[in-house]
Image (cartoon, rainbow, N blue to C red; front, side):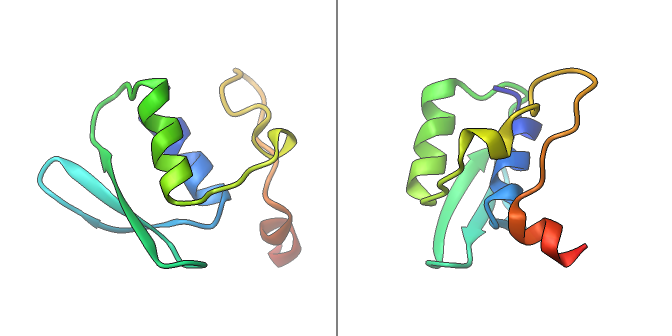
Length: 85
């Protein structure tokens, strides 16, 4: 999985970037205060990406993230983000 796709999923789930470290970025889920490091590689292996999402307790419905990897499609926004628009 591309790093930008993982970051997009984290943002949609409500997580935010806390700070940049030497080799990792620290992401926080404000709903539960959990912090997790995301490596700064172009490609992040699928098991690691799933582990990061699981640790941050980011639960996304499939339809919420549909289109993230596809070309020419825009990802659907999280319902809370759409309400803010």
